[in-house]
Length: 351
Length: 197
Image 1 (cartoon, helix red, strand yellow):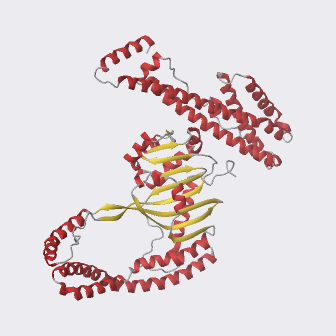
Image 2: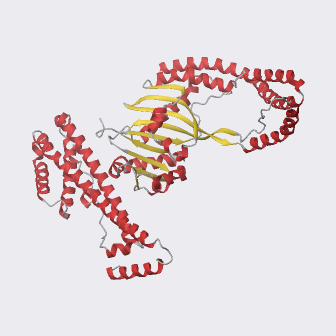
């Protein structure tokens, strides 16, 4: 590490350590607030239900409600500390170590995600929410690149909550009937909560976009068989065949992937044997099968992973600049993916 | 399987299955059409190889002109390249000899590109750089076209040999196609002897 960088990182380390100490103190308070919040939530639900039978409990309900809302005002200091690192320190570290890359803690490029056609797969059709973080954009060896962590969420029926809702409805129905006897309005009241759905994350991964090292027209899609579902198979049977299925020379890839190309020769031109072998090695090393698309001279790459880039722990003391070495390694790992896939090799094909 | 045996087997199958599975005729039609599609795909892929080889051939006169001013000591290599190209323009495109000559041309071009490294003025010449880029691109496209052809031929050969499509293949004279395979001399690395003296 050169001296200038070392001095800079040392300054950052001292500043971050002050922030960490503050977060540790707040965490002690939060360790009381968090269970209190849960307790108040439970009491609030019970009191709110009882309020239907004993309306006089309304002031109590309101008081507990306000207390509960006050506890919500405090955020988890661990999350706040990590956000502080990502918003205030990492952009400066990026600027010093990788001036060709810019970083922001949250966000993703929806345009590029749509262009990749990865979201068209049946596997992602239930997505209702997308969350992106650690959005990095810039150039690696003169190649336009973008990276971000991405999470896909979908609605999932919560059977236990739905059952709880049904039980609650059973309790409320006689109360409603009794209430309606003395109620003059003829409006029916809703007592059945219906099916309760939660928004759950079903896929978390790392997305990369880069300018590919060959010029080509058309598209090639490499979809892991585990990510193909019935919708895709039905679509393949009945939709007009704009894409042809191809096999490559690597049997492991053929076993794990369905590969489609708009033109067979273009498919083999893009998927050189060298590239196929590199994808195979990467998938073995990461123990995951990336979804890859090649469209009009660009590569879009999505690999499932549960890692959390640029994690921060409030209980790890920040003594000196070495604290940031892990983060610098993670930044370097972006370049490694580009080099591993040989995308930076542009001696002849693409100027 | 010979034609007569295939025909008799097919008649027996039809007689047995038709009363029970009324979809026999459409299935047979589908099998025959599948064979035809695969055969056409293989021919289409073959034409792709032909096109890429022609494109490469068109680069050669420009390459020779650029190189001969600088490489006065490599006249033999240049002469061989010009001769090979001349023979290729006269030979029938679908003949067996054609691909052997194309492979020889590939080897000569590879060797020439290695030799270019010994001529710094030529190496930095813009026209030469553009030609090298074009040739490299042509070679990549030829390789892709050959792989596409081999994949099409594999699909066709699988259908010709597997049951029950082999019955139709025998009756209608669909034949096994050969794959493109690298010739012995093309498996050798180019000679770099002069490069490190």
